[in-house]
Length: 257
Ligand SMILES: [Zn+2]
Image (cartoon, rainbow, N blue to C red; front, side, top):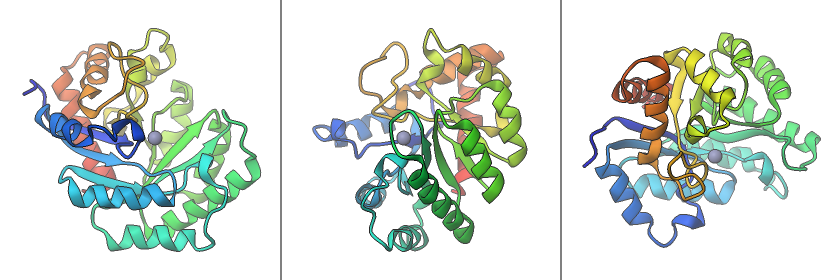
């Protein structure tokens, strides 16, 4: 048993192959260590279906369904309809995501914009929360948010500056932070962790990626969120459990759970 509870992992990928050997054990362990809920994000149609299976199988699991910018090739013509049905017909599918823009990898931008725009329009049709991937594409992501104005948007693994927060907060956006706040070179996310209003903050792992110090470089899992919580708590002069409590409440509110 851990000394912490109310750990809500707002974004993870337990469908990843890195969990294929021991997924059941890890999920049992994180639950014992105080994790109350996990929202498993999807990156394409196949993972969207896998995530739905996980939500049936594991009581603490909820899901988001969507097409990640790295996976926009060869989409079925009716992909929006498939996502819409997965969202509408399943109570534990609670968001569209992750969707967005990735300018880090060499992916043609025009098709990224098309698919992102189509999914944001779907988000508005469904009145759904949306989980956004923005990698080195802050300006264009902001333009999309201003154009489509989704009611509830989460900039997951937030990598913008504290300055950029001032642009997105008036749009009602939430952000989530994770392991990167514990990194030595994390000036950016330390500023953000200090300045973000606590009612707009969620915590996430992006597991299996982005493990916090002292597990940096190893496989991540949801109970490791406590290291980010401890760091943010230290920066803000509160306890780690207080950070876990408020981010847990925010995550319930954001996802409508
Ligand atoms: Zn992710």
